[in-house]
Amino acid sequence: MAPTRSPRLSALADAGALYALLDRSDAWHERVRRWWEQPLGEIVLPATILPQITSLLARGVGPHAEEAFVRALAAGEFAVEPLEMDDVARAAELMGTYAGLPLGFVDASIVALAERLEVTSLLTTERRRFSVVRPKHVERLRLVPEPLGG
Image (cartoon, rainbow, N blue to C red; front, side, top):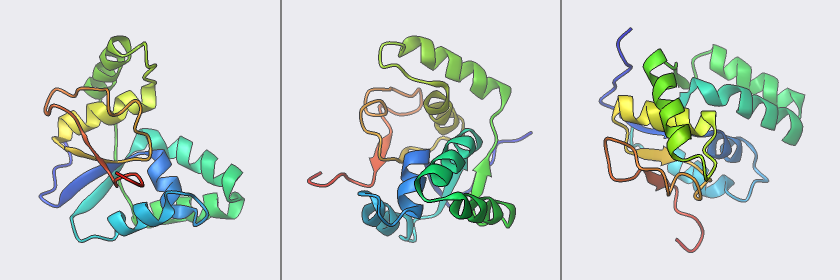
């Protein structure tokens, strides 16, 4: 299977940023919403974040929000990138390299996908781990949106 390469691909999104986008009461909501709405190109969801975001929505907003998100996925409202076996192997390598953080599988898989797709921006609210990890294709991922005061 060929990687999904889009000339319009601008960023990958992690579960925290997606949750902030969907939960208006989240402290990051306005920053993520404004960034998401810029005409910069497509934002892709790594398939590995889907269990995380559905769980967060069910607990934080309610089962109706989880269902609405799954319906939006099914309707193609979000672009989702599946994991390939090489991504899994790279995620394991990253987990070993950054075991002291620790870097879990989902975050490592996001970095692996960024490398394969040559994406340089990550829509995230998580700064601690992603600011430390060094992908192969760039010195570091550009973490967006900027935090308050950033």
